[in-house]
Image 1 (cartoon, helix red, strand yellow):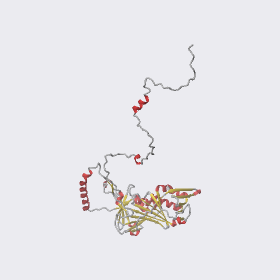
Image 2 (tube, one colour):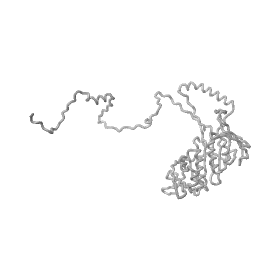
Image 3 (spheres, helix red, strand yellow):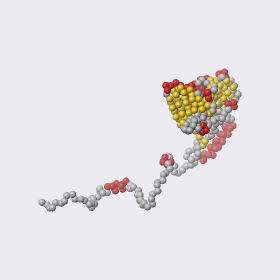
Image 4 (tube, helix red, strand yellow):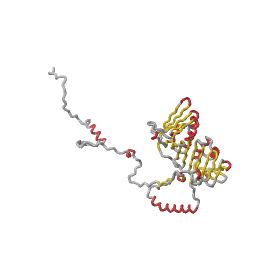
Amino acid sequence: MKCLLDATSVKVLARAIHCLAKIGDELHIEPTENGLTLKTVNASKSAYSAFNFHLPFFLDFCHISENTVQADPDEDTVIKCKLPMKSILSVFRSIGSLEKSVETCNIMLPLLEALLIIEFKCKHGIIKHFNLRYFECESVEAEFCKSGYASKFSCSSRFYSETLLSFHSSTQEVTWSLAMDQVHLSNHIDDEVDPSKCVRTEVTLAKDEFIDFNVALCTQVTFCLKELRAILAFAEALKLDLDCRMEGAGQPVLFSLEKADLYSADFLLATLTPVLDSTATSSRTTSNQRKNDVSTQSNLSKHSSPVPILRDKADSRTVSCANLQTTLMPIVPESPCHTSRLNSLSLIEPQLFPAMDDNLDLEIQPPPPKRARARYIFQNCLKATQEARKRPCEVFAPDSEGDE
């Protein structure tokens, strides 16, 4: 792939990357014949985002990767890759400086080099060159159809941002209640939390405030507010209208925006599944749980601690691109030789010593203890006399002939 962008397009691309970085940790790059697609999925797979940049967005675009060693057109392919968000954010860190200094941007994906090459041509003849290592991967897709949603309404992104200012920054989830003539927003509060110890915020949006309002089904939908803030940050900076499509509780919500024929974006967010309100089913489940607790109490007493059930918060959300399930921790049997720490050296495979010759008879004795070594070293010092050893000696001066 090889594409060329002007200063205005570079600013839009940088804002799109910043928006995707607030949702996922990896950026998927997929060149197509119609343009460039940037995608991401969050860690819990409850949010999917995709930016589609069309051909008029670029000054020059070629989706086929060029072979840098041997320019053989038969071997050219289309590369689909991903790279960490931290690496791409290091290039597009400051949007303001890019808008003031960058004149053109050249992005390349060579075939034989696993590098994403970004080159900025700035003012005063300054050229900035970046090489980012990527990983080849398959395409990431989310199955959805815009025409299949029952309700659709659109409004300016600034109106949504001003509405969300009423909610506290610590609010994690927001509930949208659709009616035939209005939309009611409120912060979501779990059943476990005491209502008297939390703040409830509610905002009502009339039908006249929307550009397009078509609600066919009155429903109540709850989803995360973090991804919505990231979408509004991108749309409000470029003064774009935001379309919202909803179907019902438990079904994903679709936010989309579009700028003429230049680019478009789709954001698919998972919603909370509806909770059964019938008292009969709740009483049955509680009675069954009590019976199971009584029957399993004897079995759990054998172990030192009960096995907890791990449940992710995102398990209650359903999205078409992922199926989330609750998992149980496996029971680890008690062993008599229990060790609290794992030695790191035990993870290394032992290396065998080289084979020695059988003819060599070497007696390897263990070293003596400390007291025995001290006696061995000082045994000559404790003797009364030292043993005289017969040593050959040379006479340098002869004896005198006699006494005078």
